[in-house]
Image (cartoon, rainbow over all chains, first blue to last red):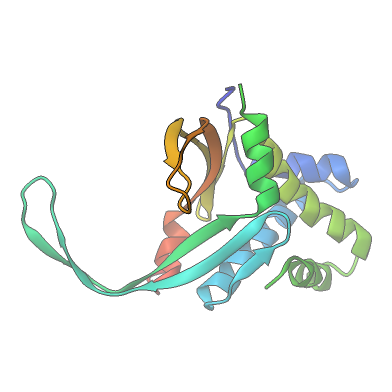
Length: 100
Length: 94
């Protein structure tokens, strides 16, 4: 495995290569995509990107947790968490690509 | 929100771009993330989250219907971890 880490910069570079926009505009478009997705999720909407995956927001009830080191009980307040369910296509491509 | 709605929002904000270019832009972003993970790379988008690949060891599974033991090969699965800013925003803290 190569184990490289890509960032926003690599995504804007891909946008730059794909359509002839400036690097600056490409970076802004990557940011807009992430912002729109985040905003929809914060509004409680599901974000479903076909052949990529689905991001959904789930409500977690309050519960009593425990500090694993001290054994002390700590209250965990109710919260909203984000889950991502990869599409079959993504799962297959990731499995195939990393197969030895 | 689905892919086409996301594309429409970006198109509305960028009237100077052709709709087909906006489609290409949105598609290439998701495609790039999948390609990175297919190579075993991580994609870290600060504030939003990080996509990575996790290894699942080979194991002996069981056919739930027949109870028969089956060998399941080692495999790699996509994983997403929500970024701190987005996690905080989901809980009204940012």
